[in-house]
Length: 424
Image 1 (cartoon, rainbow, N blue to C red):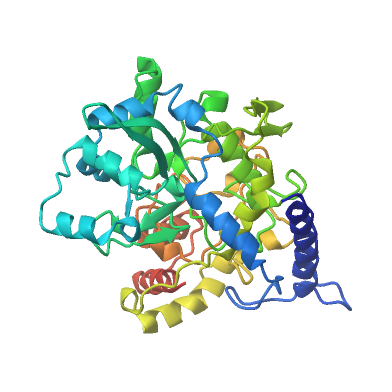
Image 2 (image 1 turned 90 degrees about the vertical axis):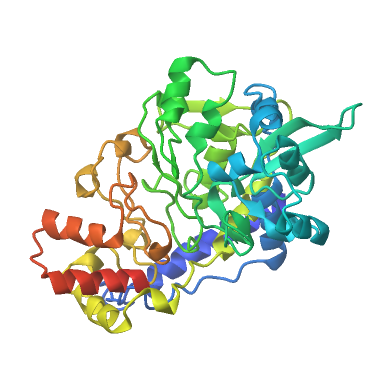
């Protein structure tokens, strides 16, 4: 893995150079206009072995965080005593249908499985079928199951399923944000929390999480972002905190380290002087994070943004909306280039005032104190929109920009632009 770290660093250095030269004219040094969503960054191919290793890490690796979720929060006891499959599905947890043996599938279909019994949840954990949750299950002397230890993985928040078997049960869709997941409500069930902290967690809505709360104590959650369509972005997350200058493995690896250590409480180390010199060290003599970062990032880089189903937008209207996107609506001013973001232009970021979201204060809690323009591919898939989820639909997004920027779009133009966004 140490060689992978060096390779990842080299790849990202080359990638950044290629990105620069693909967007500039060699003779004049002026920016060449690339239509939004078109062109290529000429990125190097990913190592298939590294990608596969990262896939396993993304889905199944807890980084040793059982020491927090079990030993501190005691969530194993909560699950064993009170979380049936019906309850788990109700709070947004997902079940991987491909992990279910044929006999279990048949029993569920025949109504022979009690989905209101926490013991059934422990069986699903034994089968490694609960997306993003790892559990060590054993038998008690009376034959009933007990959950000895449990931890979480990246897939808990950044995977969902296609509901092909039943709502909440289906094939994995890695990289898709789980906007059904209610992490605040789940965490609030811990008996280890005081009431004030529990109330904060319970105040969050499904699909919402605050990755800064345990650092600054402020309660200002954001939507769970997708983990697809990331390859080629020199800066990661809403505020562009992650880049190769602050994490040698790469920009997404920066945030992976942040989450693995400070949020999941995996055995690793995180430090960033830009965040009031915040240092979090959970290594306990065993760093289970650092060497996994290149592979984990490679897998996330391999996940392409999903293509919208053809029957979900009006193609003729989308064609007209595309012209508006680059013209009257001024979207391409920032959402430019192959990835629909100007961050590929030298890592460009924007001031706090540039956001049209209802909340503009979240950026103050970040390392950069600025916004990164969000790439738009796959935007049809993950409402609500903006970091604060303040726009329920893409039509709401268009209306917000129209009002704030005084674009004077007609109702037809707003509709056409919305259809184009749905087609990206």
